[in-house]
Image (tube, rainbow, N blue to C red; front, side, top):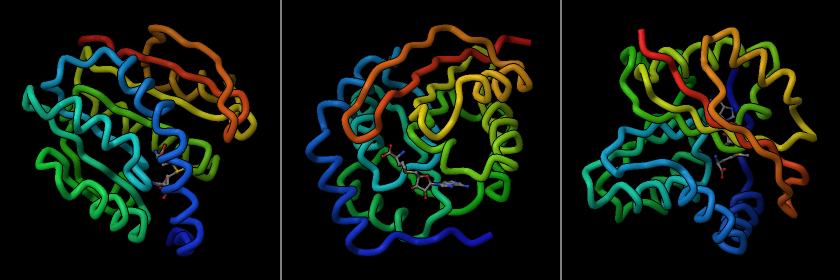
Length: 188
Ligand SMILES: C[S@@+](CC[C@H](N)C(=O)[O-])C[C@H]1O[C@@H](n2cnc3c(N)ncnc32)[C@H](O)[C@@H]1O
């Protein structure tokens, strides 16, 4: 199914919202347990606002961000906004069609994306995210609770044998109540 691409107005508003809420993105990325040398999959990277903070964080220690988005237009926006970062690569398309290798990422980062995926596709996406995550790797998930329930998130996580490390709730003006979860892929 082809994605509905954003209009110029939506792009401008999203980039503006990212700039106005930059501390929210930066603080969240700063709160992640990153050593700086990780291979990170940023699934549903959108305009690239979180990816920019991830890329900065990884620049010194040799880590790399792989931005994946189904939207050609968002991918192009992110590519332009992140052009100064040499440690970011861009892959456009549905995750399942990208032929990513098993266990190829230390971290999978999913920021306000899962709720955007049609509900009947979410299990397949979560299986693929779990497949590409290394053993002992972490999935960081953040979603607005007005669009997806914690029960559904828990089902997706449990079905893919990921283990909850910690979870919290908070509130963001543009998103309402949000849920943040950190999940571990057990070794073996
Ligand atoms: C609300 S935006 C979040 C963007 C970014 N993660 C952020 O927090 O700023 C959701 C993004 O998910 C992308 N998306 C939706 N369905 C997708 C899919 N099936 N595969 C990959 N990306 C998808 C959209 O194109 C959009 O860029």
